[in-house]
Image (cartoon, rainbow, N blue to C red; front, side):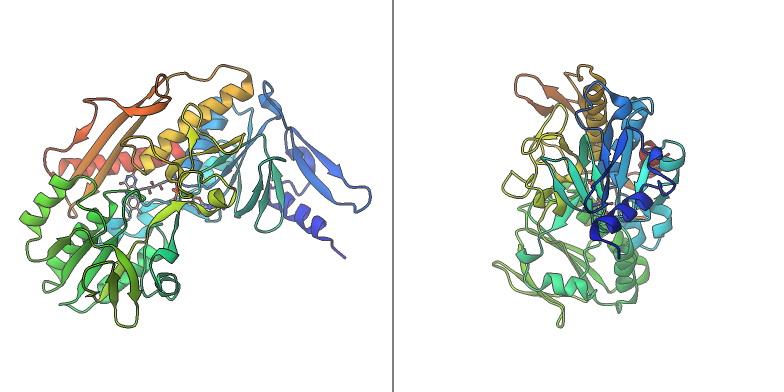
Length: 447
Ligand SMILES: Cc1cc2nc3c(=O)[nH]c(=O)nc-3n(C[C@H](O)[C@H](O)[C@H](O)COP(=O)(O)OP(=O)(O)OC[C@H]3O[C@@H](n4cnc5c(N)ncnc54)[C@H](O)[C@@H]3O)c2cc1C
């Protein structure tokens, strides 16, 4: 009979592609429990100054995690072993995914494989979830039952929806009746279908939570793309933006100009509308103060917090929502050897929750971890950059950009005055830049 430990070992060995023996795992030893016969694979702990025997475990293969996995391998000259745990078979980009809702692109256009990360860079990609982390023992447990020991853990699990903040939303989402599509993939395609099959004359309502949430301009971009589709395909339909915030949270002047010039009578913006409940049967959104709103397609985004695994590991030490980190290496302030990057962190001033920012966090973190595990001093003055494009129809785009420098005095990142800024106006040339940006950042993480 197979014991639980034996099953776990089997899963781990399969997951790590080491079924032929443990020798494939550099820097690991197999420990056999004499009584039970259970085997666990043990990474070299305390591998400081010994990159050849160190293992970095990366949780989440999105913008932050995929980049971090590749850069730890690159910067350590392929000495440090990297294991990446991600449940999805491929990387699906949220940036550009709003275009799928307008029908101009498909989900395949924003999907990239993990194959090069594995074959070219030697990252061991394990298709699974991490269900718990023992920060003291430095062991992560796979949902399928195996255990992975690590010297350093990089967590980039994105965001978790705070379902209980909006009554009935979780059930309505699970039934596929009120979708979010705030993680690109099957939900994006399902929301596209709802928009496409909606009768002409119907309303598409998008509810935005109070900031901070993933991708501040994303909901306004989505509203523009849907309005642009309606203009051509369903001219009697309308888009309603119901925003819990006092005003547009990103690229405000640019979006407002487009709404008044291109979508007058099609798109309406209502600030200070904090959603508190939904009724999927009647297509109704309820608000803290204002009247209920009924619509044919509801796209209700609840408040968000750090990815569930970060919260569950006790790392969400900012308002029980986001994870505070040491900005020099993104190590959690709640647990040693765990580095949190991407949307899960408590942001510094004017730092967006964006894919580009997650990519920047990943590189600073990879460099700091490689430095520590190699016995070198870390970079004392890291920089971060961000550019975020938003399509306002299928041809024109606007951008916002920023540069963030580490301040030794204040021990945080601060925006560099005068660096970056907003597009002067929506234009077609930036749409080609937006695609170049996407292709190059996907390659940076995955190729
Ligand atoms: C519609 C939309 C448009 C956007 N547009 C832009 C844009 O134009 N530019 C831009 O820069 N950003 C944009 N963003 C924001 C961007 O997508 C996010 O900021 C970015 O994905 C954050 O990266 P991350 O690594 O933190 O999370 P993600 O990229 O979401 O990656 C998290 C990964 O972790 C995995 N995971 C979670 N829990 C576990 C676990 N327990 N075990 C294993 N794996 C786990 C998930 O499956 C997921 O793949 C947009 C977002 C949306 C929704």
